[in-house]
Image (cartoon, rainbow, N blue to C red; front, side):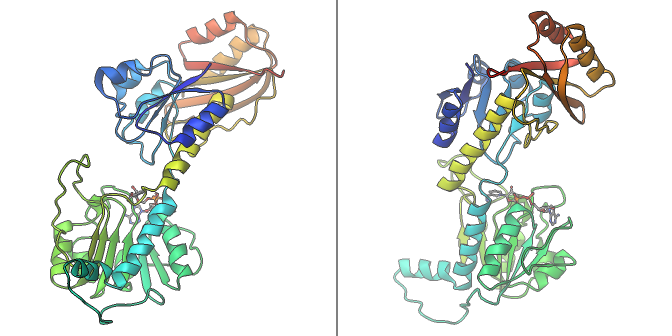
Length: 403
Ligand code: NAI
């Protein structure tokens, strides 16, 4: 019986999927570290984590019996992906599950900022009545510049256009423009035409402080800035100065260069006190729906890998989609990407009198992954020989109960 250890309060949808697939589940609410993390995966084939459990090379080495790792979140930087690949373990995540949640928040913030709601809300709480239309605008007809037109950026564009906004985007890659979105020639071209600039780039060396004093100077006077990407992308001190100079009329910031580690830690930012500003604690993707989607998406990928050897969506592994198991047995073989590995496998199969029904090979970097459908179940001698072959990292056999 296969079993999964799920840490960090992973959503019930994952547990339901595993139970449907006859995988037993042990759940823990918190993250694990140190000795506890070394011991906990014993007896399990699947380990599910979120962002607070760190799996370095030592933890992965100690858990070599695991078949696969599920990151029930978007990012995978908490796992040493190369070490997992070297141990023959694919790592799966849920890259699109919270895309819509972020896009909706951005659109809501754009409308609130255009109407100066944060400022008027603060005044109302303080007993002040700031009725007036000056400086308040509709979203219809305004131009939104989307910096980074990937999964989230393009969704923001679709929603913005549905509300009658003009969409311009800037991306370092050529992207398919959705609807009537226009690709800008440069970052300056995008921001200088926009009433609202929204950032959806990854944290890289190139995007570090890409919105600095110079770029902020290229914004139209009175523009709005929204950042729900990564805190490193904006020079926060330069942004504060641009707000104080009334060059930027409103901002919504969800991500910060330094964020508190837990909800109990104090949050400080140079942006505190800016009148028309929405500051949120990195909640762009934090919705019930996103958590549900993540539970389903990652569990579904892990179950497909358990049942068929499918690695589509693995972040550290060659991707193979061999389809359902129809032959009597299937051999899943992970090997170092070097000449002779496939020949060694096929020689061992032939020596045991096993015929190959179908074979799917994919390599990536140092890794090779080959899925071989067999006309009969491998003998114990063959399995021992496969396990002893130095070219192989690991072999797993799936038997077809119907064949
Ligand atoms: P994605 O990878 O689908 O899209 C990123 C886009 O940015 C790509 O099209 C890429 O070509 C482009 N890009 C990269 N470097 C660029 C540069 N220097 N200039 C212009 N474009 C550049 O990523 P996705 O899923 O859309 O996520 C975007 C950001 O949102 C990421 O930083 C991610 O970490 C963050 N995020 C934040 C959440 C929150 O809770 N606030 C939740 C989910 C994601």
